[in-house]
Image (cartoon, rainbow, N blue to C red):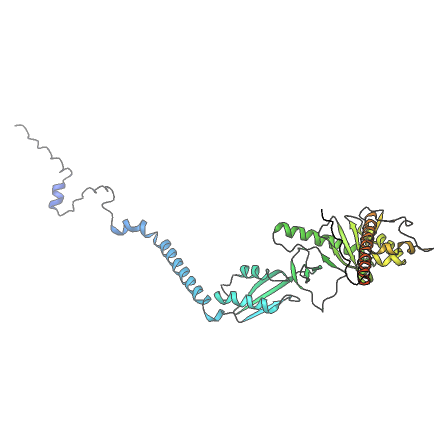
Length: 368
């Protein structure tokens, strides 16, 4: 007889069935992870939780910033920073009350903590005499102001007769006080209009004035000058002082020191003559040649003025008489003579009328 062989079933190799019967635990294959569906909730929230510290930091910073801003607003508006004192330094000519009033008015709106120091400085520099104003806080309730004042350089005589100090920038500073040191001479010819062009012209006038002051102060000539007219800086004219206050010296555009010295020499020579009191101007605009002008009436004594040892206008090498003033004097004399002749004729007519007992009878016209 043939032996019958029984084939082992698939999946029951190695006696797996016997192991089940024997109470063994069956091992199952592990299920594959498809798309993380099998992960736990904590494992899936891990990447998100890593951003939590950063979010907390940003939020905390925003909260702290808001608290600081709110505290700043509350502190700056509090009475603790209310303006109570203003410290001023360098106020020699500037008005301290005006500075204090302006600062108090501006800071009262905002308090010391929030005060706009730059704006206050700009407003202060618009006041007379103040060139630069440096403003700083003195917490909790004070403001300190350091002033750099403008330096007065010349005294201007205005058209209205006022005497005002000006500086190098042609800024009018204020009235000349009786306690101020008297300048050597005054500046005339100031343009009182406004505008950048006018201000530039006035700056040039101040520069020319300072140039004249330097040239005339060394030899002591400035004492004989009352004021200088620089309305045209290319035609400078000096009005003399004292007994010569009616005399004008015309200097032109250069060599002011030498020309004034020559003009004073010519004037002193002619002042020794009887006609010296009639001198109205000395013109040295041509440089080498001085022209002396006379007022009306000088012709009446011109023939008797020349005496031995005193140079006349024609004899002085640096001075010649002006033909135009002479012609004017001659015309004035002729006019006076005509008036005298007319007056004498009227008087003679009046005497004849009185002698005849009244007006002379008119001749009767013949009838035709």
